[in-house]
Amino acid sequence: MVQADNWRDAVKWNADGLVCAVAQDVHSRRVLMVAWMNAEALQQTLDTGLAHYYSRSRQKQWMKGESSGHTQKVHELRIDCDGDAVVMLIEQTGGMACHTGRESCFYRVWDGEQWHITDPVLKDEAEIYGHQ
Amino acid sequence: MVQADNWRDAVKWNADGLVCAVAQDVHSRRVLMVAWMNAEALQQTLDTGLAHYYSRSRQKQWMKGESSGHTQKVHELRIDCDGDAVVMLIEQTGGMACHTGRESCFYRVWDGEQWHITDPVLKDEAEIYGHQ
Image (cartoon, each protein chain N blue to C red):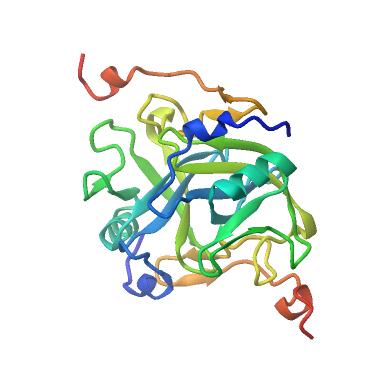
């Protein structure tokens, strides 16, 4: 992805300097995760074609997959009308985006009475992050 | 959608008492909008089966479509691993979710140099909101 700097024009950062970022599987169109980007993370995403986010808990920018190997190759990046959210169509390495080892972070559905888990764990967390 | 109150257990509200809400077309799986919900909006969404949000600028809860008629019937509602985002599969009345009269709020794609508008305006804003 060739990089120009005028991507900044459309972005409306929140008070913490972040925009909301939705990652959607390019094949199934399932939403895999929702996270945050600061300017550096969005810049890195556009520059490298791999999704980068900002961790609010660790207060640092990170590349998705840097620990797990589950990188996200960006096929398309869109911004919304008011500029405070982006949606990416991504190719999910390893077929799992969630740190719990599931395909999607949205593995719980409201069934009218409770949150029902619909997705199997494909790989144990310990195995993903190498802590046996 | 039958309502129990234990949906609250899984939700992790942010400092402003909100969760991020993604609305995705149940047929095309396109992401149509990203907005926010407070507890009341999520409760109303579960109770009525129609998407309700919280407007940060107007500081009030609102039903999507209350002015435009473009309501969103919720087919499925999921929550993510850390409980700070929900994704809904919705049926979009009128075929447009954006206040600009487009199908999706994400009508601009990054083409490597600029934000390129891909979606036509289906209906003028003035016509949608009745200000001729």
